[in-house]
Length: 237
Length: 321
Image (cartoon, rainbow over all chains, first blue to last red; front, top):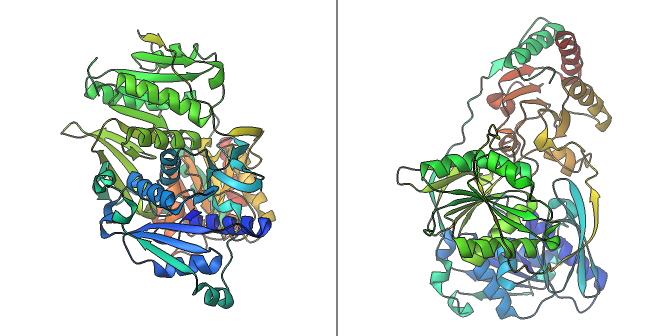
C-alpha cells in the first residue's frame, strides 16, 4: 500500500517503485494499492501509478481538501486504509517537494499505531518484517520492524521506472476506486485545520550583487580575496 | 500551575537544545511565562546545569536506562506524558530527523498542529506565536499561527545562536513516567560514510554544479576548501543525474548556513538557492553572465571556474599569511 498526493511527487514515485520491486522479488500474492487524498481530479496521476505497476488505486476526493493540513490528510489516509482492510507495509515519500513539511507519514503511523521507519534509503523484506537502512544526521541505522509497518523513503532508494506503452495500455483495465469523506465514516470536524497560514511572503534576498571584474584572472582573484577578507568570512579561527 | 502558559524546549541533541533556548527565552520573557527544558536520556543529569545557565527556569529530567538512545516510542511516551501533565503552551522540538518524527507523532497524539522547520519564531501583537518557514518549493516564506494548544514547532540546527551562559537559578524536577517500548529494533549503527564533516556545521562551503565537467575536477574545490578550512558541497544534478555524490545542498537536501558559500558553476535554480539562503556571504563563479545565481550572490565573477578557482586559492593563501 502506498500513498500518492495530488501530483505524484518524486519521493512518492520512489515509494511506489520500491513497492513494485518488493512485489517483483516476492512474486505472487503481493498486491500494491495506492491511496490518494486530493481536492482535484488526479486520474492521470493514478493511471500513471497503475501503469508503473500498482494493482489498484484508491482515491478520496473532496473539494474541501483544498485547505486540508497534515493532520487532516493523515486522518483521511488512515480511514481509507482501514476501510481497504489489512496490509503489511505502507510506503510513503519522505516529504512533498512543494511544502517539505514531511509530517504526514509520521502522523499516519501514529493514527494507525504502526512502527515507523523514516529516511529510508535501502529496504528489504525478511519474512514478516521489514529491514531498512535509514540515514540520520551523523549515522546510518539499520532498523527492523515487524509487519504491519510504515516506511518513508528518500530519493536515494531507487530510480523509478518509466512505464512503457504496453504497461500503460494494460493499466487501463485496472480499477480506480473513488470515495468521499462520507464513505469513510469520517466526521468532517476531524479534518478542521489546526494551523493557519496567516501570511505568505516572498523570501528575503538582500544580496550585494557586486560583480568582480578585472584585466585578468589574477586581478579578479586578488580583488575577490580582499573582499572576502574584509567581510570577515575567511581567515584563521 | 496555570494551564497552557509555559514554553518548553526539547531535543535529543544538547547543542540544538541550547541554540533553541536563546529564542525560547525571548518568547518566554515576552509572554512572561516560565521556560522549561525536557531532558531525556540515561545518566544525563549533569546536562541540567548547562541548560539552566543557558536560560531555563526549570528542567524536567527523565533519566532511565531504556532512554539511553533515541527510540521513537519511548521518547514519545515520555514527552506526551509530560505535556499532558504540565500543559505547556509552546513546545519547541529540535528538527533533527528523529526530532521531527517525534514532534509529528506528539502533535498527532495531542490532536494539534505542527509548524515544521521554522527558521523564525515571533510573538505577534495579539500575543500569538507565529512560526516562519520556507515553503512552496522554496519560493515563499509562510507565517503560521496555531488554532489549538500546545503550539508545536520544530527548529533546525543553526537557526538560532547559543547565548552567553550565565550563572542563574533554576529548578531540577526529576520524574518517573511510564515509558513505552520501542516498536522497532535497531540492528546496526554505523557512521555516515559520505562527506564526513556535516555540511550544516561548516563555516565555509565550496560547492559545485553542472559547470564541473568531470568528477575528478572536484580536486579544484577541495584545494580551495582546504585553504579556507571548509568543506565541499554540490548541487542535486551532480548527485541525482550524474551519480557523482549521494548528497546535495538544496531544499531537498542539506539546508546550509555557512559564513561563506562559494557557488562554482552553479546556475542557481530556486531549489538550490532555498538551501543556501541563510549563508552570510555568497560568491558565484559562472561562465554564463545571465545565470540566476548572480541575482542572489554578494560577489559575482563571470568566468571559467577552472581558471578562477586556482587563482583564488593562491590569492587567499597569500593574503591569509
